[in-house]
Length: 285
Length: 296
Image 1 (cartoon, chains in turn green, yellow):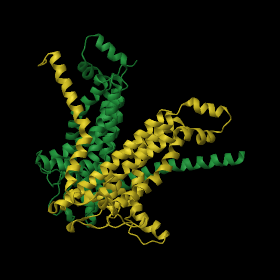
Image 2 (tube, one colour):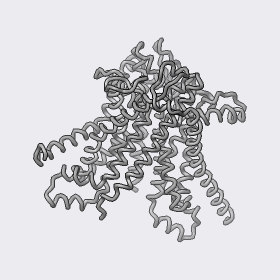
Image 3 (spheres, chains in turn orange, red):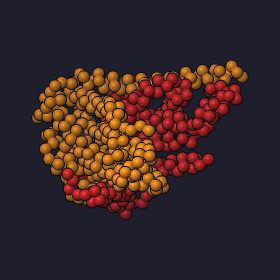
Image 4 (cartoon, chains in turn brown, red):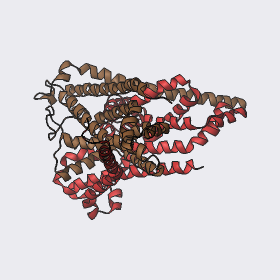
C-alpha cells in the first residue's frame, strides 16, 4: 500500500517536471526559431525603407511602412483608450466605491467584453465604418483597436486602483478635497506604476493584433501621412508576405516576425522596469 | 493657472468619467446589436437550423451551410483544450505546491512572454516548426500522407497559445486555497501527494473547470494563428490529419470578395455573431458557475 503510494507520487512528480519543462522548452523553441529564421533575412534595408516596386516578387525594399504604421496605430489606440479607460477605472473606484453591486456588475461586463475574440471586433469595426461612411483608414483602425483594448486596460487599472487603502481617501476628504480631485490627484499618483503597466500591456496587445485591423486599417506601401488613408501594420505585413510563393519574400516575413517579437519583448521589459522604478512614489501604509 | 475653478472642474471631470462609463457599459449590447442588424439579411431567408446544420457552402448560389466551419472550430478547440489542460494542471501544481518560491519568479516572466507573443508570430512558428513536424514525422508514423496543414497543426499551435492563459488562472486558484486546509491534512498523516489529490484538487475543482471554460472561449475565437496552419479547405474533417476551416478563418479570409454578393457579407457577419454568442455564453456560464460555488 505504502509503496504504491510512493510510486504514484514519484510518477506524478516526474510528470509534473516534464510538463513544466515542456512549457519552458516550447518558449525556447518559439524564440529560437523566430530569431534563427528571422536573422537570415534581416538587413538594414528591411528596417529603413518602404517596399519598392516589385518588392513582393523579391526585389528591394523593406517594411518601414508596416513598422511605422503599427507604431502609429498602436499609439493612437492606446492614447484614445487611456482617455476613456482611466476615467472609467477611477470612477469605479472613487465614485462608486460604496456601491459594490454596481461595480461588480461593471467588472462582470468588462470581463465578458474582454473575452470577445478580436475578429468579432474587426467585423463590428467594419460595420461601424460602413455605417458612418469611413473608408479603410488609420482612423477606422484606431477606433476598432481602441474598442478591443479598452476592457484590457480598464480591468488592469481597476485591479491596481482597488488596492488603494481607504485611509488615503479619508485623509484626502478630511483636507477638504472633492471626489474628482481625489481621483485624479491622489489615486493616479498612488497607482502610477500600475497604470503604466496597464497602458504598456494594452499597447502590446494593440500592436500584435491582426484580426481586428484586417478589414479596418487596410494596407499600403506608403508611410502613414493622414488619418483618412489606409495604413500598413506589421502582423498583416507578415501574413501577406508569407502568402507569397517567392522564397525571398517568405524569408522577409520571418524577419518581420522577428521585428514584431522584438518590439513586444521590449515593451514587456519596459513595463517591468518602469513598474519597479515608479514604485517609490507610492505611500506605504 | 486653471481656466475653471475647482467646482467647475469637478463637474467637467465627473461628467467625462460618467460618459466614458456609459460607453463601456453599452459596448456588449452595441456589439451584439450591430452584428445582429447586419446578419438580419441572411436570417430573413434562412432558418437558424439550416444555417448551422447544412453542409453546402456556395455563396453564389445562396447556400450558406456553416456546418463544416462550426465542426472545424469545435475539433480544433476541443483538441487544443485536451492537450493543454493536463499540461497546465500538472505545471500549476508543480509550481505552487512542490517547486521553490524562486521558481515561481522564473515562471511569471515565462507566462507573460508566452501570453504577449502576437498570434501572427505563433502562426509563423506553426509554419516553421509544427507543420513540417507533422508532415515529416507524425503523419508517416501514423501512416498518413499529409501536407502538415491540418486540424492537428492548428490544435497544437492553439494549445500553446492558451497555455499561459489557463496556467495563470490555475496558479491563482491554487494560491487562494487556504494553507490551514493543507496543514490540517498533512498533520493527519497524509503524504503531500495525498493532500494534493484528495484535498487540493477537490477544493479547486470548480476553479479548474472554470479556467478550462475560459480557455475554451478564448481558443474558439482565435483567428490568425489558426488561419495560417489549418489548411482552409471547406469540408467536414474526418481525422485530425485532414485540413479544415474554422469560423474566424472564414471571416478573415473572405472579406475582400464579399461586396459583390450582399448575402455573403451578411453571412460573414452571422459568423461573427456566432463567435460573439459562443464567447459570451461560455464566459457567462463560467462566471455563474464560480459565483455558485463560492457560496459554499
